[in-house]
Image 1 (cartoon, helix red, strand yellow):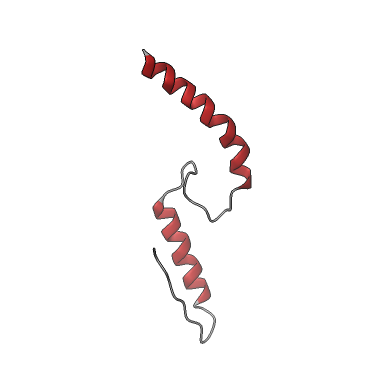
Image 2: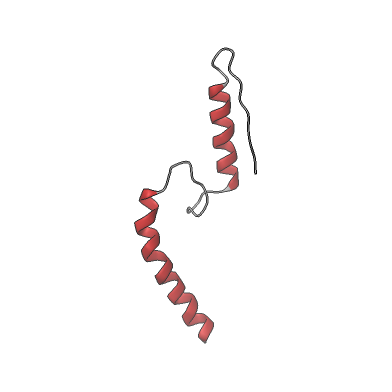
Length: 65
């Protein structure tokens, strides 16, 4: 019984601050966002790199930590 009550409270507690924070997040942030995944981040990164490399004599370096 306790776990059901705690899960309900968790949804209420997380939903309130989340609705206030989400509009202020950077559009390039993929973590902690609804329906955003690692695949979205990789697609965005590849798109930005390929767009940048269309410029003559440009190069790109990627640092992954």
